[in-house]
Length: 303
Image 1 (cartoon, rainbow, N blue to C red):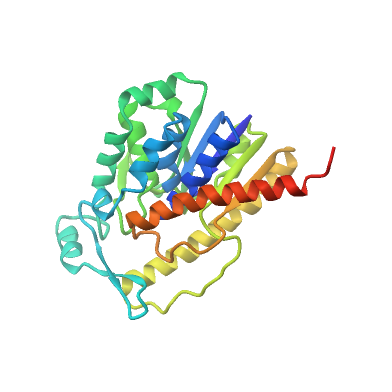
Image 2 (tube, rainbow, N blue to C red; image 1 turned 30 degrees about the vertical axis):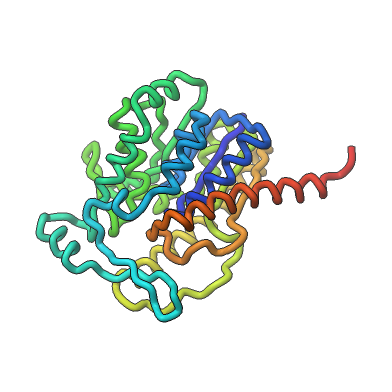
């Protein structure tokens, strides 16, 4: 049983899409199980449907307005020409005035998910032998939960995909089934263990981060950049722990895991979505997967 796992990573998901495209189209890999966290959850349904060009077009066209109905930050360039976020005080104040628990709201993202994943496509997936699973964090119970398409109707599954992407406190905190839910990355950034627990014997894992750190964060300029750096630190720790546990479980179960990291730092803030960059990242992901597999073939021992 072969599984595809795609980690969280915001706008860097475009790179993951490119890697997945190469694995499916050029290597011909067929997956029984697809598991995504956060941005990964946005990709997996369309990958399972083999509608790669469709999700490529959607994914590389996303901008801040596609996601936020109330965006809590502004994107500005610093003196070095790098994108930095600053507080959109007016939107944040409006959000708090309306009783929100977060700085911003991401209801536009749910609308986009529903618009791009039709009920017919949902039913096609549900009737297939493939399992599509998204990761969410149950803040009320302090638990990581995995939501399979096989267990829910259309509206509920759209909710779970959306919830998996809600990077609080910048995006929506969702109350569902009596609990508060948020981004799956807070619990499991790279759910390798879950794939193996569900029976996978070979897992292709797309990790939207470099294998080693190549940069230091710039000093925080405001509360948003501080929170962004803090969340980045947390997610990095969770990611490394997930990979370590995944390797251990794979070894115990004689499972094979193939790791695909980003070879370079794509961005220091994955909440910033820019069409041209994401198109480049998709192509970079495709080319990286191609070069990695050439290298693997070159070092295989001769039979």
